[in-house]
Image (cartoon, rainbow, N blue to C red; front, side, top):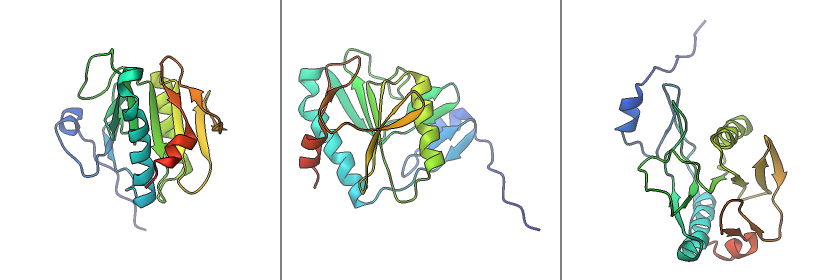
Length: 173
């Protein structure tokens, strides 16, 4: 009977100085590939970035795609979009909780994988964790649960930011 190969342990220093295309996550010594986005995924990612970039000065934020976030000592996630407080120092790898992170579902995503990621973000202290499905419903992760995203605009806790799904949808290409 054949057995599946066990993932090999990669030292944290190796992960931190290595580039992956697309970027990979690091979970307690194991490199974890992220699902590749397709056109719809990329379009949502760009629309979210554009929305927040349009308001970056007014809301005192920075918005970045696929930025490494250290959610625990040996756990690094790479959200699709990260919104950062401009008043905090720039970090090459984020160690302070961002204002918000966005995950956009890809066809290869599993529910277990995405819920694990969202829980890691919440444990780090991120208050706004949003999950968008290019072909379905959108959710907010709060208190360990997915809740349907409100259709009306709402403020992101602890910031001057406003999330407006209707305006973001207008930016889809």
